[in-house]
Length: 85
Image (tube, rainbow, N blue to C red; front, side, top):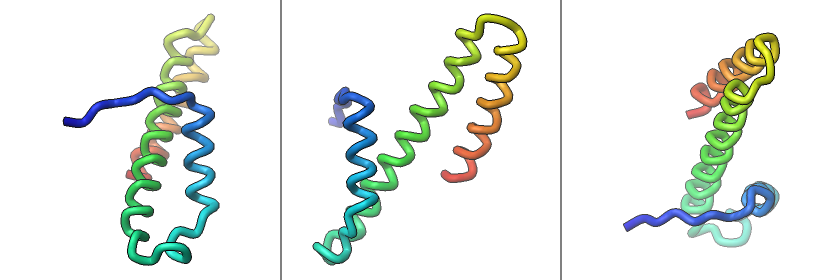
């Protein structure tokens, strides 16, 4: 059974940056597919978090102009995220 955990966003971001920096195939060639899979899943999760944050800006906008701009930003971000999946 899969369980979720909560970690600070800063730690999550640092993990992704560390994995991107590290050249896993050079260190453990037999684990490179697992490394790529994990890094890909973490990147997708980060994109979903960012998409959720852009959506929240629509919900919490103070006026119609801000809401409209936030909606445009959200739709552009969503298009970019959908293209990367």
